[in-house]
Image 1 (tube, one colour):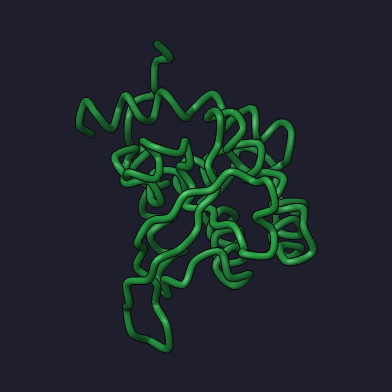
Image 2 (cartoon, rainbow, N blue to C red; image 1 turned 90 degrees about the horizontal axis):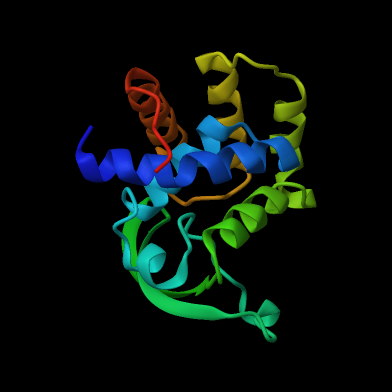
Length: 166
């Protein structure tokens, strides 16, 4: 792992663990999503809007909700397209992790919570795979390989030394 990756992992480790305590979404899933969606903390969305998860806002829900616009790649009907989308802007990383965790308690993500309720620590890779698949099937990402990418990152992180919070 590069120094920059190690620093990003250390930055998000605490908020991910706090999110797990509060919202019951396993920290390895949350960490992998933040890494994937933010490009290890290098995306402009993360750097400018404290949004490590690529969380979008809907036009009809923008009333007073801070947002920003960026181009993003989406898989539509099996083809990758670049579209302009509105993304949530957060005042802090803590706010972003809180919104991410609470989002899974909406009706849309019911299967994710159901999957989380069936597991306990220490998590197995198969348990985390079940959750990643539920997240993908609930429409979190248009990438047809999203759950595989999440699992690959979890395996990479598990092979790395424990981050030191600085």
